[in-house]
Amino acid sequence: MRRVFTAAIAALTVTTAGTLVSGVPGQAALPGDRPVPVAAAPAPGSPGLGDIYYPDYGNGGYDVDHYDVRLRYDPATDRLTGTTTILARSTQDLSRFNLDFLLDVESVRVNGWSATVTREGVHELVVAAPRPIARGQLLTIVVRYSGVPSETLVNGYTGWTRTADGALAVNEPESAWWWFPANDHPLDKATFDISVSVPTGVEVVSNGVQPGSPVAEAGNRTRWSWRTTRPTATYLAFLAIGQYDIVTDTAPSGQPVINAYSTTLGERGPTARASIERTAEIVDWASGLFGPYPFEAQGGVAGPVDGIGFALETQTRPVYGPGFWRRGANTYVVVHEQAHQWFGNSVSVAQWRDIWLNEGFASYASWLWSEEQGEGTAQELFDFTYASYPAESPFWQVLPGDPGADRVFDRAVYDRGAMAVHQIRLAVGDEAFWRILPAWTTEHRYGNGTVAQFQALAERISGLDLDEVFQTWLFTAGRPTVATARATATAAPQQPKSWTKIREAHQLLQR
Image 1 (cartoon, helix red, strand yellow):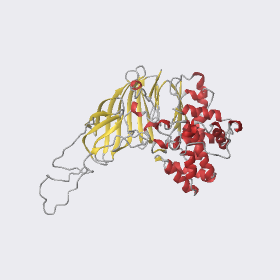
Image 2 (cartoon, helix red, strand yellow):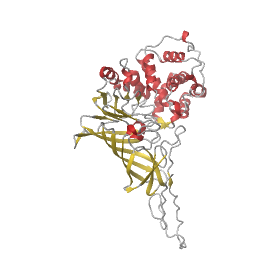
Image 3 (cartoon, one colour):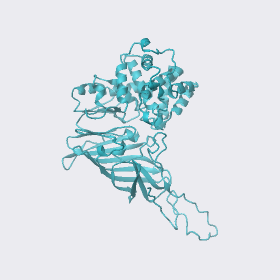
Image 4 (cartoon, helix red, strand yellow):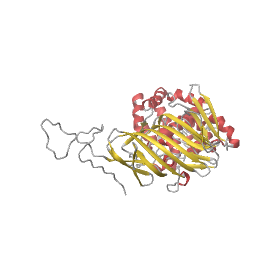
């Protein structure tokens, strides 16, 4: 049941600027009186941003500028306590608003005033405004909370991974719910300060840079702090807590490079290092194709053996599961996650159905890296990938441009998604293609985009009508006919050297 806060103000009306403008109701107007502005009645912010796949993700009525997430974590019990301060601005006159969050809430204050809180649905925290909130008003929302994230389940699932020596807050499309209250949708990006107090001897890695060295606290504890200075989608904020070797360096661009390696990796540790330590090289290469690197730091995290089974493009510092190193060094997954810094992180989806803009282009980046390394051209990889899926395979029934809420990480989004990018490249020609990609990342830098917007940009730059290629490869079920690709296994081209690594990476990336 919704609890609605109603504020009755008998004699005064407050404008959006907070100015008193009206007198006593029913009093006759005096000569020369000006018309009295009528303020909009405060209304609830929507409990979602209307995403077609996940309509209750995110919230309406306000826009977040910054999250200050201050936590205390105990690996022995997996207990998390925290205070998150949200700096936001209202986008309407509000009587209440929602936050996406799951843990137990002790208190919420809005601009210093204690607010009443109720819960609706699975992850909706409803905050009744202690005073009417005017459109455009600056908001400071302070939430105090605690809980055991690994035991806080949604249909048996948690986005928080407890490990033997700590935890990982790494997941997509939702992970914030288990460690900080948020407006949890890529449409509302913000900057972050994240600090975590842990027992001394435990490391904490997060996004961006460290504004200072770890600080000793009472009780044999240490507080680690991290800061992001560029707009970040909430699912791209992360925590890696445990035993890590942290390696710092400087990229050719002058940016800090911070890599972290779980001490549990054993014999996989050297292969993880041989891959992740090439991050600065890969970012430098990718910058020549996609435009300037959009963030303030670079790096990667090799997670523990009992951690996640996938990799995620967490902003500035992707997190990799241990499976990527089982066959030796693997730069292809590093290329994939670093390409996401442009395609997915800087330019994020406007709707989750636009996921091809993330995964298709990150997958195609690994084909381009293969070409750079002399291990197979993009055309050879296209031919071999196309030939790998028979016409009757269910693979061809998933539409990368609109895969469905339960298939946003389907193999087709990655593999057919990369094939779609290659077909667009062939349709427009290399001269236009290499102008389209940096134009996209420049025009939508730190913002959001849709497949339709990308098609419009590609048509504008190339001067071509691309509706057929977009419809065929992204929105039509069935195996497209391609004259240059071999259709049967017996006629398949020779496997490029990179294909096994790329395929294995894509299989592990599917969540």
